[in-house]
Length: 345
Ligand SMILES: [Zn+2]
Image 1: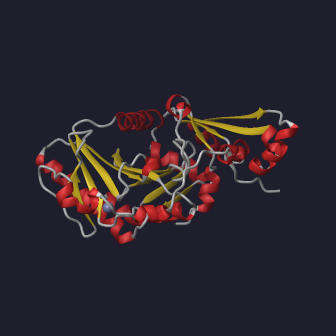
Image 2 (image 1 turned 90 degrees about the horizontal axis):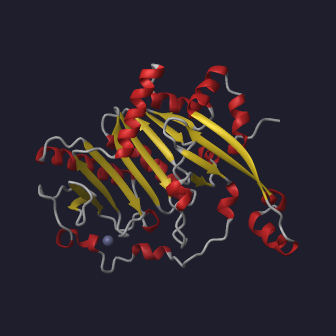
Image 3 (image 1 turned 120 degrees about the vertical axis):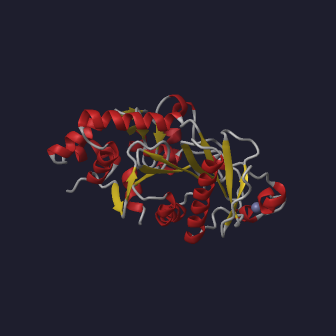
């Protein structure tokens, strides 16, 4: 019988790779499988069957620990975690269309502007962030209030407008080596305003996580005479977790920061050229039930790096990130192999 493509079979899947590919995997990752055991009481049996579907699987939980040896990204996978009961709050999708008192529906009057003014796209307009966390900190505010209403042409326009904003900051102040774009979509992702908007920052100092990745890239090149990102993609592709789309590589990431993380590494000239691909991934996200997500885009060593991550249901009351994610490893329930099958681009 063919070995099932799932995270709990990762050691066997790696063993089946060609020697060269297996060695490359082992250069990057260490894996440890363990079984967390417990005893279900007779009084809990019905609850466990309903909630976790199987008493046996609950009593013997397969936990997969994966570590990237270069970045120190580390994960603990256990599918059962997604079945836990969670405190919920009522959410009606119509809430996302409620424009009452929305500051971003009245951009020109209710939002400040950057020192170089506003940049107007066809489907968005820029504003200056009122509480900044970097030298230049702007907003790309969508004309559409509801961020879950999205079109490919709109997204491309948002990204092109962001590119113009970065050009403008560079003209205003030379030496802005740090250009960073983020989109926090809805409250689970930390967005404070429902109205769809991206954030853009430009400054003289790169962010630490980016500097660290650049260092890893350089050291890897020196030690292995090879390209870190190209090899990272190769590993994912060998396992069925990576696809090449034009000039972009899509990775269903083996060490996701949280649920359903996807990374794009691209040699496109401009990041707006990835608009169609990013749109396709967001559409897929919506189709598989993602409601709130984070996206970041930046350039690392000539690669555009786009990261997308699911932040959970809009009904959840508890945060998806706890002390373990902040100070230990990322705990993830959604299998990247399942994600690779679900996403169709
Ligand atoms: Zn609005």
